[in-house]
Structure formats: C-alpha cells, structure tokens
Image 1 (cartoon, rainbow, N blue to C red):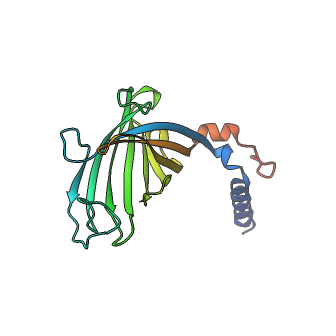
Image 2 (spheres, rainbow, N blue to C red):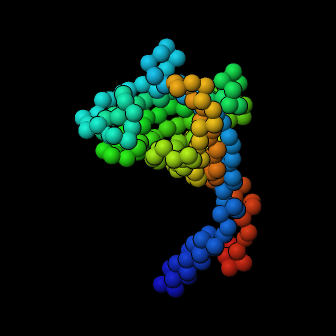
Image 3 (cartoon, one colour):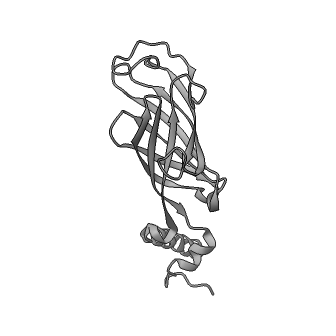
Length: 198
C-alpha cells in the first residue's frame, strides 16, 4: 500500500514539474512569411472555383456571383517567396471557404499550406477560422505534418497587392510552435531533485 502511495506521489510531482516547465522548453518557435497568389473569376488561370452552390438566401454584404448563403469554394493557390507573381514558387494553398452568414461578410475557411522547396519540402501547416473581410485576418494554426507536426499558433493574413480585380496577393505571416522531439526535450529539460532512480 505504501509503495503505491509513493508511486502516486511521484507521478503527481512529475506532472506538477511538467506543468511548471516553461513552454519554450518543450516547443520551438516557427515563424515565416509567404505570399498567396489568388486568381479569381472564371478565366483559365482561376485557382478558386465554386464547389457547391448554397441554398441561399442572397447575402447582401457580398458581391455576386458567390454571395448565396452556403456557397462553398475550393482553392488551389500558388504560393511564392515574394509578392511579385514572377517570384519563385515555394508551395501551394489548398482548402475551402464557405459563405456562413446570411447577412454579414463571413466565410468559414479551412486550408493547408504545403511547402514544396528547401528544408520544409513536403511539410504542411493546417489552418482554419473565419474570413470576415477585415483588413487583417487571423486564423488558428491547428496542426501540421512533417517538420510542422503538432504545430500550434496563428496566422495573420492581409491583401498586399491587387494586380487586377481577379488577381490579388495575400501575405501570410505564420507564428507557431512545434513540439521538441522527446529525446531533445529530455536533454534540455531541467531534472527534478525530487525524482531519484535507485
């Protein structure tokens, strides 16, 4: 009985230590900026297309043709290193957005940034939230794969260039963190004088 009580006490102490260890000891920051080239409309370059026509009603705060409540669009936008559309491609943004209000300019968005160059080639950052036409949009980072497995944080997005009414450039600033691999965390985390191996 005393042995199980001692084990429970050690487990509680270990949990307390984990809860008081600074987040930075267990996660490393990830920060970056990319530019999303959005091609709208119905031309051959269009990268955002209607997937589902919503049942309506017409949302008066949005411009036609995608202004019915429930309209859902799918995106496959090129991502570049700089705002210029001739800048080096570094990935793609895949996802959907849906008109989610009957009266306000609100879209629910879900999208994934896939990086295709450099050390992060093949890694993804998964994001979601709402787009309410604010000057600066904030979306949650809700996960990732590859180098960004377990990512958490947020993304700030804003339009930084409009080549035309059908080609705009969004700047995405990523502020996130990813878990430190367990072997590194063990080496970096302070040891507890309360837990002694015999």
